[in-house]
Image 1 (cartoon, rainbow, N blue to C red):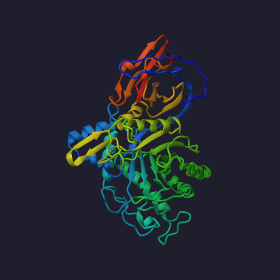
Image 2: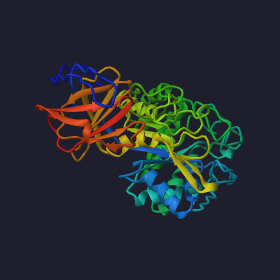
Image 3: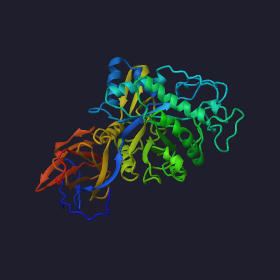
Image 4: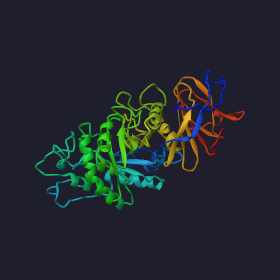
Length: 469
């Protein structure tokens, strides 16, 4: 939401809507400023790592197709345009991880690699092929850790660092180039399957140590490794992403280290960050395109919560607000949710109980889809002014000229406002509607279009007739 320009807007008198709380007064209408251009949009997505895609595969054929339509369909489902894959690092195969493509030490960093490939990759190969059939063609693969024998702590868990990085000396030698080739080989295996890996990441939350797969990089070490991986990946035709810090503001140090090193910056194609330790509420200090590459609310206290607005952090409206802030405040070109599907007390878009051949859908899926179905890759965020208090608004222009305005009413009152869109179609997501078309929300009053916003709702306006309403 931008307030920096004084623009002509329709003054709309608030009146009561039958069956809803009294309308809050809107002193002026919303004005889309098509001359004000912000970041390009690469898309929206989620992760299919940690064998969560296998849960969907384990359903019966009819249930599997239903779940896939919910998770992938462009018209009726979540409509992702990016999928994030996890690159396995373990020599074993616990349920929560995937096999490494090089499970054993070949005999040192300069020895001939003994790569292996099972064509399944924890269900991710199958899932990406299903996605391709539904028109999804951007895949971002990210490694949580290098294989254990490449690290100074001898395990793919509990942090540790890649041998050979500055300040990391190992008896086994310098594994930097071997790790870079390992990552690129992963992309080559997917190419054998007919899938192009577009972005390749070498680290996940390098500033956070966990009991599952993890590996540390300082900002200086991340810039150093970019200069090793970059030329190898570029020759293979794969872009490089970094650095997936566990917090958006914590990403600053990584961005600054890369920007200060022209050679490292040369090989960075996408700068990535997560939203756990701090939210995405401002742009990062980088000239690279930025992605919010992982966030999900904690489900520890809430458990499985399908509600739109129950006052919990796992609600659908909470996700809608997080997406808005990431795009409109942080200038991110992508929003990638943590998991599309998972099990138990998850905050994923859908919950899968493969043992009982069942699944449940959360309102988070429709919050996500309200953005992803209509704001498509190659869109550009444009300016919009005049939002009433408690209403968050962002606007986008797709490559085909379609304009999309997302209006999130966070208040408990209905709001009426004008907007300079021609004949928009309205879709409403709230406690009773899941991205439902709502023709009654739009009306013409004189030369202006009027929008009625339900309390605690997300209204998505789609106009195929750009211009003043």
